[in-house]
Length: 212
Ligand SMILES: N[C@@H](CCC(=O)N[C@@H](CS)C(=O)NCC(=O)O)C(=O)O
Image (cartoon, rainbow, N blue to C red; front, side, top):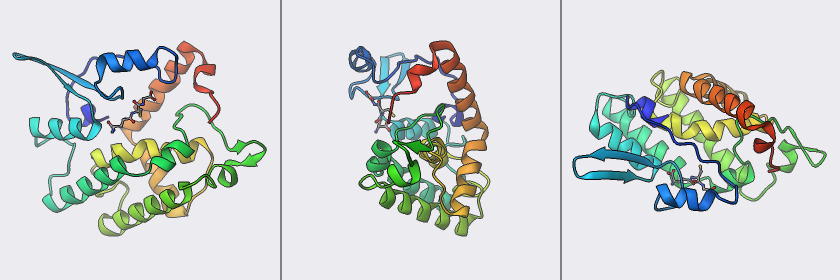
């Protein structure tokens, strides 16, 4: 999503996670063993950028007119704070509600995910903080995205978080659901979801049905 916002055409290399051969494949392309990793070929050789926020900043330095950050400096500072917080917090939400763009999981072990998964440690607290962030952004800039109608990297950072509440059928406050709906309907998220659907058709849907 960042490369799309940055206007950079990239060749993509697909690596499935959580398979026996995933760790060596990840380490071969990323020093942290995590993705995303952007490889940029230049006169001095290949530069590897192995962190999403660093990739976003590099893209923006490369072209400060691109859509990574808002043009207005106040909105830009706000968007950077939002993206940085999403980047460095919310591990409990990440772990408690694993991301899956394909599967719908409203029930877990006979209990609604709202009851079962939202009770996992830190998930409710993290969700409360995200809802407060969405509410503050909407009060300041009117929505539908973080700084109004410009979709920027702060929205790209939130998009995987938003998708989790859809995957698990978790109903949040109406204004949060409106933010989540806007994120899920944004052109870049629609593209990502469509590609995930095609990938699931191609590799088999059981690949993406691992139990959370
Ligand atoms: N700080 C990193 C976090 C990257 C991260 O946690 N990536 C996950 C996938 S979203 C990963 O590569 N996990 C490796 C694995 O599951 O084996 C970033 O945002 O770039």
